[in-house]
Length: 131
Image 1 (spheres, one colour):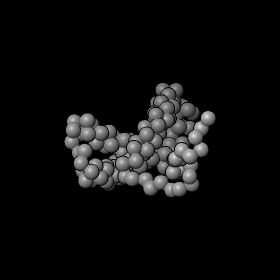
Image 2 (cartoon, rainbow, N blue to C red):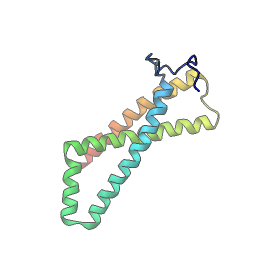
Image 3 (tube, rainbow, N blue to C red):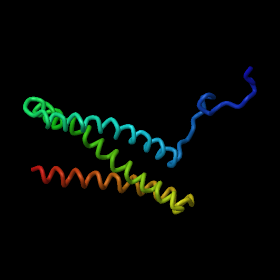
Image 4 (cartoon, rainbow, N blue to C red):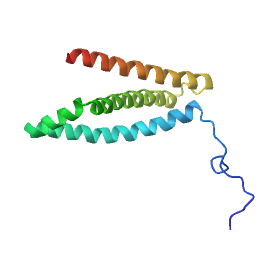
Protein backbone atom coordinates (compact mmCIF):
# COMPACT_ATOMS: atom_id res chain seq x y z
CA UNK A 1 0.00 0.00 0.00
CA UNK A 2 1.37 3.41 -0.96
CA UNK A 3 2.29 5.90 1.74
CA UNK A 4 0.01 8.97 1.31
CA UNK A 5 2.55 11.21 3.13
CA UNK A 6 5.32 10.42 0.68
CA UNK A 7 6.67 13.50 -1.19
CA UNK A 8 5.56 13.73 -4.79
CA UNK A 9 7.31 14.88 -7.91
CA UNK A 10 6.99 18.64 -8.61
CA UNK A 11 5.06 17.74 -11.77
CA UNK A 12 2.55 15.75 -9.72
CA UNK A 13 2.10 18.54 -7.21
CA UNK A 14 1.22 20.98 -9.97
CA UNK A 15 4.32 23.03 -9.26
CA UNK A 16 6.53 24.17 -12.09
CA UNK A 17 10.01 22.82 -12.53
CA UNK A 18 12.54 25.31 -13.85
CA UNK A 19 14.58 23.64 -16.57
CA UNK A 20 18.30 24.23 -16.49
CA UNK A 21 20.51 24.52 -19.56
CA UNK A 22 21.93 21.05 -18.96
CA UNK A 23 18.51 19.39 -18.77
CA UNK A 24 17.28 21.21 -21.87
CA UNK A 25 20.40 20.17 -23.80
CA UNK A 26 20.04 16.56 -22.67
CA UNK A 27 16.41 16.51 -23.79
CA UNK A 28 17.30 18.14 -27.13
CA UNK A 29 20.11 15.63 -27.68
CA UNK A 30 17.63 12.77 -27.34
CA UNK A 31 15.03 14.49 -29.54
CA UNK A 32 17.60 15.23 -32.27
CA UNK A 33 18.82 11.62 -32.13
CA UNK A 34 15.29 10.36 -32.78
CA UNK A 35 14.80 13.01 -35.47
CA UNK A 36 17.99 11.93 -37.22
CA UNK A 37 16.83 8.31 -37.23
CA UNK A 38 13.51 9.32 -38.81
CA UNK A 39 15.30 11.67 -41.21
CA UNK A 40 17.55 8.78 -42.20
CA UNK A 41 14.48 6.86 -43.31
CA UNK A 42 13.54 9.84 -45.49
CA UNK A 43 17.05 9.86 -46.92
CA UNK A 44 16.70 6.18 -47.84
CA UNK A 45 13.37 6.97 -49.54
CA UNK A 46 15.06 9.69 -51.59
CA UNK A 47 17.97 7.41 -52.55
CA UNK A 48 15.53 4.69 -53.57
CA UNK A 49 13.67 7.17 -55.76
CA UNK A 50 16.96 7.98 -57.51
CA UNK A 51 17.59 4.28 -58.09
CA UNK A 52 14.07 3.76 -59.45
CA UNK A 53 14.27 6.91 -61.55
CA UNK A 54 11.56 8.45 -63.70
CA UNK A 55 8.34 9.42 -61.96
CA UNK A 56 9.55 8.31 -58.52
CA UNK A 57 12.52 10.67 -58.68
CA UNK A 58 10.43 13.55 -60.02
CA UNK A 59 7.94 13.07 -57.18
CA UNK A 60 10.69 12.99 -54.54
CA UNK A 61 12.38 16.06 -56.03
CA UNK A 62 9.11 18.00 -55.91
CA UNK A 63 8.61 17.02 -52.27
CA UNK A 64 12.10 18.09 -51.20
CA UNK A 65 11.95 21.37 -53.09
CA UNK A 66 8.54 22.35 -51.66
CA UNK A 67 8.45 24.82 -48.74
CA UNK A 68 7.57 22.02 -46.32
CA UNK A 69 10.37 19.84 -47.71
CA UNK A 70 12.88 22.68 -47.39
CA UNK A 71 11.75 23.28 -43.80
CA UNK A 72 12.22 19.58 -43.08
CA UNK A 73 15.70 19.62 -44.62
CA UNK A 74 16.66 22.75 -42.66
CA UNK A 75 15.45 21.12 -39.43
CA UNK A 76 17.32 17.94 -40.31
CA UNK A 77 20.51 19.95 -40.88
CA UNK A 78 20.07 21.81 -37.60
CA UNK A 79 19.45 18.54 -35.74
CA UNK A 80 22.50 16.94 -37.34
CA UNK A 81 24.82 19.83 -36.49
CA UNK A 82 23.47 20.17 -32.93
CA UNK A 83 23.71 16.43 -32.28
CA UNK A 84 27.27 16.33 -33.65
CA UNK A 85 28.47 19.30 -31.60
CA UNK A 86 26.77 18.11 -28.41
CA UNK A 87 28.25 14.65 -29.00
CA UNK A 88 31.73 16.20 -29.22
CA UNK A 89 30.97 18.03 -25.97
CA UNK A 90 30.11 14.70 -24.34
CA UNK A 91 33.34 13.17 -25.65
CA UNK A 92 35.26 16.02 -24.04
CA UNK A 93 33.47 15.27 -20.77
CA UNK A 94 34.46 11.60 -21.16
CA UNK A 95 38.06 12.78 -21.48
CA UNK A 96 37.67 14.68 -18.20
CA UNK A 97 37.42 18.23 -19.59
CA UNK A 98 34.67 20.69 -18.80
CA UNK A 99 33.04 19.36 -15.64
CA UNK A 100 33.25 22.67 -13.82
CA UNK A 101 29.87 24.43 -13.79
CA UNK A 102 31.08 27.56 -15.63
CA UNK A 103 32.58 25.38 -18.38
CA UNK A 104 29.41 23.26 -18.58
CA UNK A 105 27.32 26.37 -19.22
CA UNK A 106 29.89 27.98 -21.55
CA UNK A 107 30.18 24.83 -23.67
CA UNK A 108 26.40 24.48 -23.75
CA UNK A 109 25.92 28.03 -24.99
CA UNK A 110 28.75 27.49 -27.48
CA UNK A 111 27.01 24.37 -28.86
CA UNK A 112 23.83 26.40 -29.46
CA UNK A 113 25.65 29.36 -31.01
CA UNK A 114 28.04 27.38 -33.19
CA UNK A 115 25.22 25.02 -34.20
CA UNK A 116 23.08 27.86 -35.51
CA UNK A 117 26.02 29.52 -37.26
CA UNK A 118 27.19 26.28 -38.91
CA UNK A 119 23.66 25.45 -40.05
CA UNK A 120 23.26 28.93 -41.52
CA UNK A 121 26.61 28.62 -43.32
CA UNK A 122 25.75 25.19 -44.70
CA UNK A 123 22.47 26.51 -46.08
CA UNK A 124 23.97 29.76 -47.34
CA UNK A 125 26.74 28.08 -49.30
CA UNK A 126 24.49 25.17 -50.32
CA UNK A 127 21.83 27.44 -51.79
CA UNK A 128 24.45 29.73 -53.28
CA UNK A 129 26.11 26.78 -55.00
CA UNK A 130 22.76 25.54 -56.31
CA UNK A 131 22.01 28.85 -58.00
